[in-house]
Length: 286
Image (cartoon, rainbow, N blue to C red; front, side, top):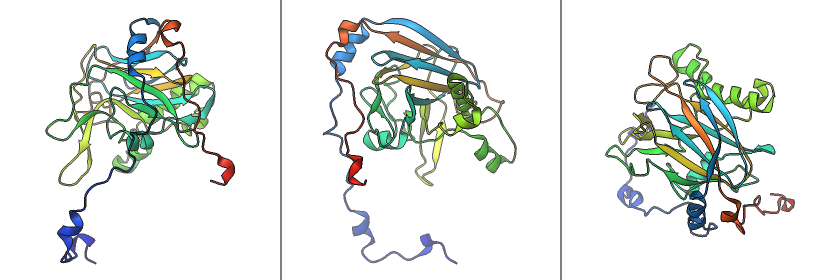
């Protein structure tokens, strides 16, 4: 049987290909981000806690609403996989697909991390990024993607035929289980598609496959977020290190990541309105 790509093109093929692109979710009507307020609040903040995530392991943290948190490179080029949950309800968690649809394949300052349906509200706002200079490179790659899922032991078994226990999925599951004091098998069902912090990725131009390349992150770089709701977070220091060659192995150099929690002066956020869950009336039968 011939591939569909072997079929002859119709006479109007170029006309069909030439239709103009239309943005699926124009975001101009989203509630505006109060970046001036957040920038001012950043000037008043004090670090109150930190968590070191060891190489090829996961770690958890909590961020109260109205606080900032940073993910920091501390020793070497290292990628991290980030999950976020509503601290009061694990069913509300980061929705990478809708974040991608509302913003872009890679996120930066002013973009928000949105939660799952039926909540669909900002969980965190990106307020600072020392890699904001990177932009898009000659390969079409950018930093901090919401494309990839997370390396996991099931895909590893499928493609390589062996077992690896420090995939990001496994690390995040263990971190959440420990934080919430629940069995790891229960925690696993709450682990979700990630924000690939510091990861440099794109799609190949010929085969359109998802690719990774060495992250440009260096010690001292960080990405910073403002918590719009009370958060529980989990972060995996990916076993791929800078993801310049492979992942899900012990063969590449890996480094720790640091999570810092920062508290601004309360006066700096007086009157700020925090997002409520999406007001769509579910009683209408969906």
